[in-house]
Length: 72
Image (cartoon, rainbow, N blue to C red; front, side):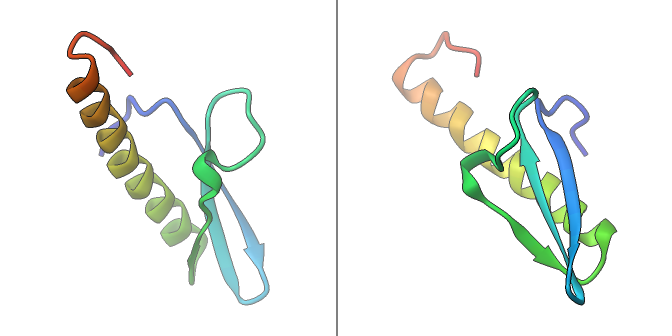
């Protein structure tokens, strides 16, 4: 798992399920408005972390195509 993600992971119980999301430091809204649903808190947080890793890789790849020297 990548411990250098620039995100804070959050979770909350919603009925019989848990939701997980990530925010940028200092932000309160889910990054890219994405909230993931899971059966347990650990699963919700793991799904949020995994999604953030994939999304950040996509952002970095896109930045590399448009500006190879950018560091997102």
